[in-house]
Length: 317
Image (cartoon, rainbow, N blue to C red; front, top):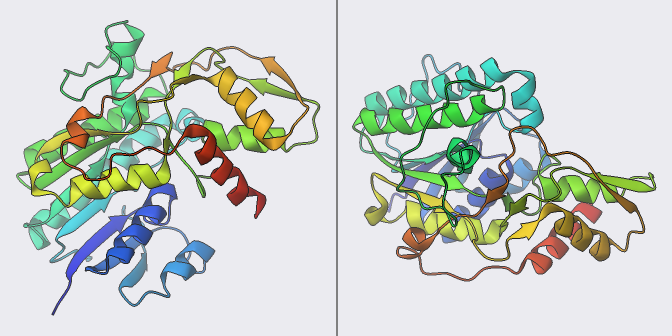
């Protein structure tokens, strides 16, 4: 019996890698991962041991002559991410993210018109409403987004994601839009606040500087996020709808998060509180009631346990 085909762009990234692993565990699909990372990346080499996994090193900006055909599901995670990278090259961030996705959609319309695209947007689309004090918490998906009159460099990322959401709505393809909220765990790199703090506490300096100390976040462990992603994406009831991905529990101030990580690492560093990061929302908490109506597993990994698991993974590097 021929297995249905799944394509994941950006599959060698943080969420993409964990998503690839979980889909392969289902043993129901032929999975193709597209990324710009080299094939000898140790995570890709691990996935290649599975006969149902195929890796394609490809820059999605160069799709000429490439046909993505007969895919049942396409998960689009490929994007320029990270506040520092986006702030450094905001125009590149916007144009690359938006127009690469546009090319992918056109390719699928032509060669795989029955596919369902799962588009990874971002929780930052709620940012302008938060800046104006017009956002309710926990935040639900069914609110009207706004675009401010003045655009900051950091805004280029979420603007490209809004652009992507609208491309889908106009494409006539089937789709599901996901807005992840502060996902963390093993293999997330060092651009995330949790991994960045772990790295800072392991440095030789006697102090650790914490930015946006009074801003709050609710964090979602990667295993819980992947449960939500798969539970929604493979469900026909999610078609043409938008969902938050995340954990509304254990909302925590960044300075208290730093204290928790310091304690778990047994660090004696002195904390120094710095200014708020420009453009960073004061609060971010998702409403996942809509998500939980469609998924089976509804438990959350406690923050302390998730950070412990993450620390153990990074200590092995």
